[in-house]
Image (cartoon, rainbow, N blue to C red; front, side):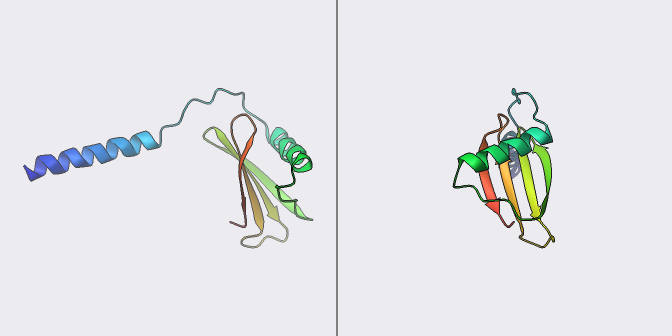
Length: 100
C-alpha cells in the first residue's frame, strides 16, 4: 500500500512540475535586438521610474521563452554593476532589476 501511495504521489509531483515549465505559444512577431534597445530608450525618455543607463556600458539581449532579457553591464564590469530589463513578447517592460 505504501508503494502505491508513494508512486502516486511521485507521479503527481512530476506531472505538476512538468506543467509549471510549459509555456504558452508566442504569438507576437519576434523583436530584434535593435528594436528592444529602441524600446528601452523610448521608455526611459517617457518614464521617470526607470533607471538611467551607465556612462559607459555594453548590452546583451536574449530571449527567454516569450520574454526578452535586456542586460546593461556598466564598464568596467564588476559584480552587481548591471541593469536587467525584462520585456514581454509585445515589447512591454514588465520588470527591472538592479545589480544582480
